[in-house]
Amino acid sequence: MSDLTGRERVLAVVRRSPVDRVPVGSMGFSEGVAREVRRLLGAPEDTDINALLGVDMRAVAPAYTGPDFAFKPEHARRSFFASSHKSYADGIVERPLRRASTTREVEAFPWPTADDYSFEEMAKRCAGGSDLALFGPGWTPTFSQLCELFGIETALINLIEKPGLIEAAIERITDLICGLVRGMCRATGGQIPIFKTSDDVATQRGLMFSPTLWRRFFKPGLARQLEVARGLGMLTMMHSCGDIGEILPELVDLGLDILEPTQAHLPGLNPERLRREFGGRLTFFGAISTQTVLPCGTPRDVRREVQERLRTLGEGGGYIVSPDHQVLDDVPAENVIALYQAAGSLSG
Image 1 (tube, helix red, strand yellow):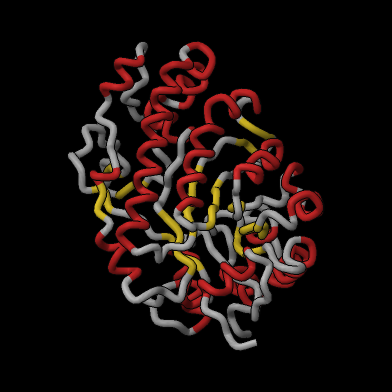
Image 2 (cartoon, rainbow, N blue to C red):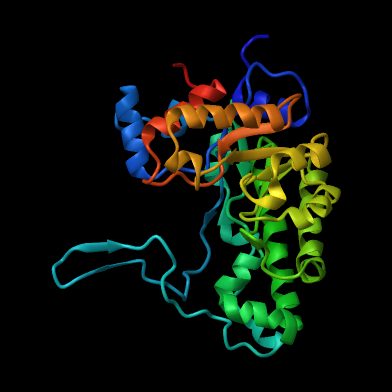
């Protein structure tokens, strides 16, 4: 078989067609890890790390060009000694809808629409086609966005005490996401083959709320998103960290094609169970643990895990090899190289 492009390889593995090698993805690398990988591979400092490792997929997103945000949390500050502190989390911030008590207050929030975004750069990226499997339109959560707006504690309380507020907010969030999907397809002439939606609704022990609440509040909006994307001829991918095994059958029934990041060390995402129950209908992205083997193992351990995942998840298609989250500075660069060499995207 002749070499496939990244786009061809990803689409083929989702459709269970033959491929020249398993496709590979990434969820990002800290600059420290990327710098060390470049050094070990003898690559220039400005080399794109994903291109260097042979990653087959890339995220693309529109640019927000609407009104200036009224809410601007500070992410960096200086101490008395003029040393800079960079935060890797949200910090302590005020949530704009934390005190909302009526749907009127929720409706009065200056909700963005797809008209507040520019798709110009996406269109340029897609002009003439792309050899990569592009996905978009970026980070588009529903529950996580509710937490940004209300605060996580208030958002969870409102699921029970003020459901009308949650439903009103979800309606506007879903409108935006569907508008972005239509906008990016229109601007790029359908050159983006994968719609990626996102929502972190689980911990490592299961959902943050009952499946009943998920079905009531979040499933209808997700169904609308997937319906819009599939109607435009796109494959569908969902990012959701944590153990979402309890609702995975329903996600598949909604038409989900790719699960990202497949944190296979969690009980509900056991690879044998995933392959047995969903192997013919769902493609798994990830499954190489950023919590266990990548930070704590040796290159030999990493290669062994890749081969095991190829056996359990990848036989006959339906698997995209990738770290199961962003690779941070606790991961040796040698382990990153071992992962992509074992997957076949990097020679060595």
